[in-house]
Image 1 (cartoon, rainbow, N blue to C red):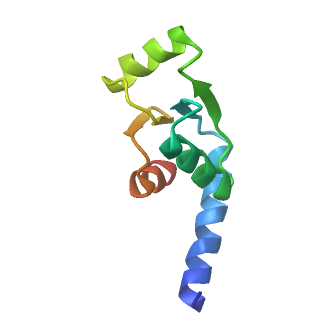
Image 2 (image 1 turned 180 degrees about the vertical axis):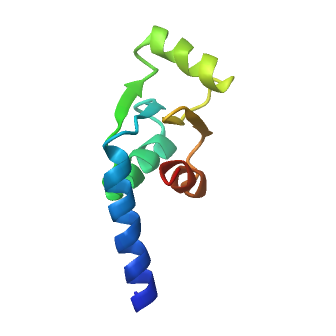
Length: 98
């Protein structure tokens, strides 16, 4: 990592820490979805706490996900009301920085 990248990374972590105090993150996933695992691992690597909802075993929460996203596919992330379909690092970072 060059010096500028280190500074950006440090500032991003500080920003995420501040936001975690007020943001709610929900990951709708299934146990067999590799992209769900990648999304949760990414959030963990950023130090972002999240609620993991297994829509494969919770029909009511699966319907909640469909109501929010309009689709049955996973993962679906709800970051403080911003719905992200699939594992999209850029969209996740953008939602966390708002």
